[in-house]
Structure formats: structure tokens, C-alpha cells
Length: 250
Image (cartoon, rainbow, N blue to C red):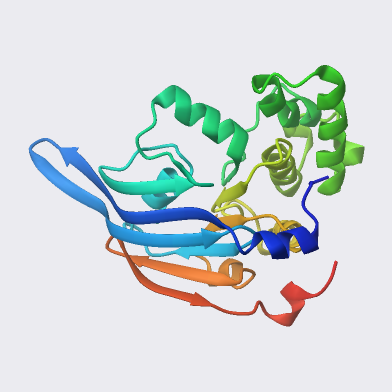
């Protein structure tokens, strides 16, 4: 469904999608200042498959919120596709989120009374896409996660894994620059978790840029780069090849 092919993904990998310099996030608690992110420098190329890991309190959720334009930094700069986004207004950030970033959350964040189709369609409605084009893109997104036969089911008629597939389809439907997944398997059993990671692995092979925030080594092992945070700083940043069962062709 994506406009990306594997070849395009490979060539796109020569372009910097995310460039972060000396990023800091400080929360104020009364008169105290609590640093959550401390002077992070980071670059992520288009087409990369990245895990951000770290213990509770390491800053990984804060960094995800900053990368996802859900929050703004206290200091430093963040360029997304060459645009400085760290100083944009809330309305400007909302437009960036809808156009450039597809989110997948641990809790799915689906509208309970809406069908899978209606949930997936929502970002396109916000973007003002025509009804005919919405129908085409939604059908393609739902098919890409293997749920065409559940398109008209509501969340309470779907399993946890199927709900997360709907969430992934919703993240894909606007053809974003970046898919940002926050603990995407956190509410799922191990078998269903592997099924969801197989879907994400397929998106990686199709050339999408994917960042997964996780505390689970098994989930991180699917990716090609693992960034470890500790006390708001990058403690390690290493590239690796996924294990053979994760990297085999679809």
C-alpha cells in the first residue's frame, strides 16, 4: 500500500530523516527542575528500523514524545525531514504529526464504537482527503495487515492482536515518513506479539522508517539498530543484523 519499495527504501536510507542536537527536556516539579533528557545527539536515516530501550525512568518515553512531536524540548534542536520542529506551535506540531508520523500505541487507542475501517480512515478525514481516495487507501492499509475480512468489525469484536493490526493500518494510511511504535506488544501474549512484529518486519522490508520504544530484548532483536538510554542520555547505540527468523523474506 505504501509508495515505498524496498529499492526506494534502500536509496532513501542515504537521507537523514531525524537530526537531533543537544536535546534536553526538563520538567518543573514545584521549585525543582527534573531533567528527563540530557544533551542527546541522534541521527536516524530514512528506511532505518530502530529500537529505543532503557529501564523505567531512563527517558525513553520522553524521547519518543519529542520525536513524535507530542512534546517540545527545553533546549536543543530537532529537524524532521530537514524542517526544524522543536520550536513550532501546537497547531503546527499537530499538522506535522498527522502528515509525517504514524503512531502505534500499547493500548491501541481505537474508537470503541467505530469499525476497523472507520478507525483507519480517521487520519485521512483530518487531512481532508476525498472520500474516494480515503476508501482506496483504507482498503489497501487494512489489506496490508491481513484484516480485510474484519474491516467492518468493531474493536470489541476483535482480538488484541487484530486491534493492534488495525492500529498499524491507521498508522500507515497517511503514508507517513515515520512509524513510531510505543511498546506495541505490551498488552499482548508472546505468540500474538511475534505476529505483530512480523507485520512490522514486513513494513521494514517495504522501506518504511520504524522506531520502536520497548523494554523487551526479544522485541528489540527484530530491529537493525538498538539505542539504549540511561538517565536521559544515550548509553549505547549499536547496529546489528536481526536474527535469521526475523530477517527472512516475506
